[in-house]
Each structure stands twice: as C-alpha cells, then as structure tokens.
Image (cartoon, rainbow, N blue to C red; front, side, top):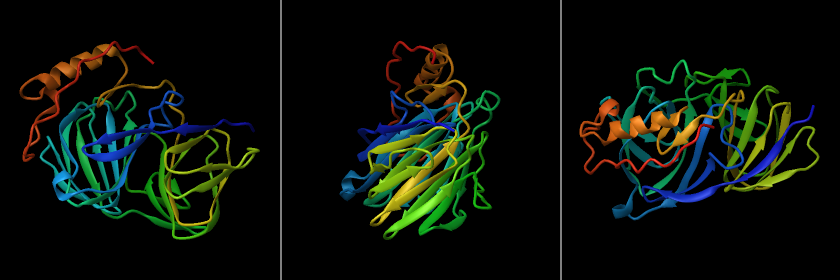
Length: 299
C-alpha cells in the first residue's frame, strides 16, 4: 500500500526568551491527526534574570499539551489552577469555550515540547479544564526507553484523555539503537527529533530518511511499521492520529472554524475582564495584548 512521506523543516523562533523550533502548523502540513501545533523549546540554559516568562494569554477550541524533559515550569490559569510541571510530567489544559494562563520557568535549564490538540466540533465549546499527570506508562522498545504520553501502544494505555484517536510517545536512547515499531495503518504520523540524529525507514518506502532536530518526518496513512536507527544517544517524539477531515483555522492562540469567530474572541480578550477567558491571578506582570486580526480565510 502506498503512503506519503514528507520532510518538514521547522520554523525557528523565540517564546518567552526560550529558543523554539515549530514543526506544526506548516505551509506543507497543517495537522497530524488532531495535533495542530508542535513546538520544541530548548534545550537551553538561561541566566536567572532571563528565565522564560509568558504572561497571561487566552486559548479556545483546543487542548494544550506540555511535556517536560528538563527543568520546571509554573502554570497558572483562570480556573485558579497553580501547578509546577517537572521533568517526566504532562500538563493538559483543555481550553474548550475559553481559558487564559501564564507560564514561568523556575529553573535556568529548560527543555520541553509544547503541543496543541484541536478539539472536534462536539467538544470545542465544552467547559475548560486542567489536569496534571505526574506518572505515565513506560515501555522498553528495542533499546528505546519509551514514555506513552497519550493513546495506546504495546498493551499500555496513557491516563491522558483525548477526544479523537491519538498517539503521543517519547522515545529516548542513551546509545546506539535499532528498533522496529508497528504502526496503525489508519493513522498518519510525525516523527519529531528532540536530540541526536535518527535514521527512519518506513516499511514500503524506498528511501531511508535521516532526521535531526529542526526536521519533522511525516508518514501518511497506510504505513504498517517503521524502523528507527541511531548510532548514538537520541530522542524523538512519535505523534499520530486519525487524519483530520478539514484543517481547523488557527490564528494567534485560537483554534476555530470561521474568521468571524477569531474577531469575536479577539474582542473578548481585549475586554478589561478578559471576557470568556477570565483572569489569571498571581502572575506578576501584564497580560499579553491581542494583536490586530488579519484578513483570514477558511481552510
């Protein structure tokens, strides 16, 4: 069975003082399953007076998924949640109808993946919520120490919920590794390197693809397995999901369907009380103002 394989170069940027590489959304590929945004932040060591500080800002129509690899980040939100995210833990904030939050690093060293999951139509106006997961299933996969972030794999199931079929897995190896992972042919996948160089050989694809941080490899539906090889220590995320029928509309911190929604949400956040997004208590600094809404088109 034929399937698509695409190499996607990340955009380089900065969030709150931390260097980031953004793999999704991209001109070539907007989503992988319901994963609609993928940032690799760090690894970075910052002076104490330049630690990451992201002021209160709004979200709607999505879940934010934060996977901490090194360091600690303090999360606050308009529900009153206050949670330190440490290495090996996940924060899941489901914005639904609307929420606002802030993030501050508590350590000089920081390395994390920040991902967004688009909510399906039936759930995107749900009440907001926040969940913290300190313990996640671990698997040994052919030399990889794997952490199952969301979904099911190898007879294990992550406690992190999702509203659409999804897979998220962190694969880390301290030295040379050669492993074959079975995939669900109905899913599409993204392999997102975080450290080191990995050779990827999707079964049925003629070319072996070498990828490193800054390049995401997309593997379309129809692939049944993938071989991962590395000659030294490496780390990558495997993201998968059922293909999203129509790409959602993304602008700033919002995930929607219509340009008119974005205008309404921008006006809400511009209100003194934050409108549907509420207010974050405890953050010592200003909230992030809404930028001008550009001319947007439906996907």
